Image (cartoon, rainbow over all chains, first blue to last red; front, side, top):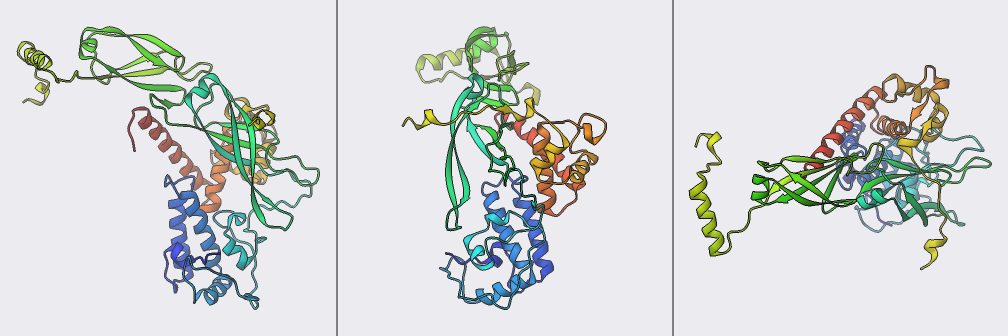
Length: 314
Length: 107
């Protein structure tokens, strides 16, 4: 097991005052809170901070940790000395970031796995099981057609020896047609088992879309960049456009500028009403990679008398 | 190989669209007492239909709003009014991000 340097994790000096520790924690908690932060490692960082703060905010635990930690550095192999904590008494209580059950083995070896951070405990002998929450990545095609996905969840459980282990559980989940990013699928009774006669909890899956090579989703609407030739934009044309439901024809009005947004009604994510598919025109220039093409561009320059910068006064 | 077929299938619903929750449902799902859900209604995080708490019906999206507000309150040591403000700003950021994504802008 690795020794954890809680001072280093929080970025405070070993002789920091309790007030400094509290201020630092609050600042970092705001920065890395998983509901707020977009940092990729926010969740892990937030848990780590919660664990560090749980020890350092408490004068007794901090004193015990200091005594123990004087000879260790972060990451070093660590084994707690027998009876290391005699003479210290730890009371639970107080709120904390993260959930005590998620604390590291290092923490558990010092302060016990049963340690509960304050909060709403469940005293009832027949309490409903805990709800579980997970995220699933699906493709846009899945919400268009509906799909069945096998989802593997890692569920913490306690084995016969009382150790916390992670079990894998696979479920076949039907992805309902028309589900949007950020929505949740509820699977009744698929959370933790209840206590006594309590009902099992529910499982909630939050939907996220995998990045699609063509479309971007915004709610029920889809956005698609469509390359068009200069003459298609200038003269108008009817062109083929790929949509989730297949190829459709789109009429480009003459005189269209790059960036013009055209709507294919009802061609977005299905629903009642269905979303739309917005096609954003992007004028693609034919390459001047042959003598003939170059000659053609020169001819255009001569004949069109076109200055794209007139509005700039140059 | 064929274990996939033997996995149980479940009746599913989209929480945000097909679910209505009572005050008791929300309390259970968030593992909090009624008073805290009522406070979330008072600060405007949740907007149930129905006049008095016993008749309140919450839309499915309330569950995650409530959980997020309660998490922010607990973890950041702020009151629910502060959590409500944070939630509103987070919603707004998410809307703007979605708009940026739709325009193809990387942020």
